[in-house]
Length: 108
Image (cartoon, rainbow, N blue to C red; front, side, top):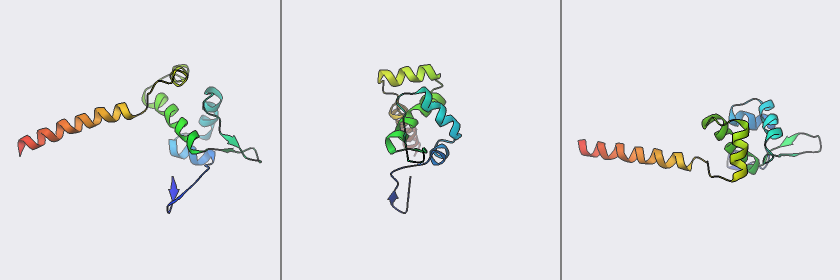
């Protein structure tokens, strides 16, 4: 999310939409459905997304697209504060990789 070692502080809705592979209207819809998501607006009224907004969007995107939650279900998960980020998935993947590597070592 930076260019040539320079980290941006704010991102436009089109940049964020591109990051998540969705259309800008989807982000505006999510903003209306999730109280956790509320990007600031500049003087011209355009949304400006900070890293914290992008982190929230990442959780919402994960719940809706990867975990296949409904909007209401994702809203409840976010409200309850349950940890549904990718660390659980990562640990499972690491365990599978470890098993695979152990099997590879046995064949050598």
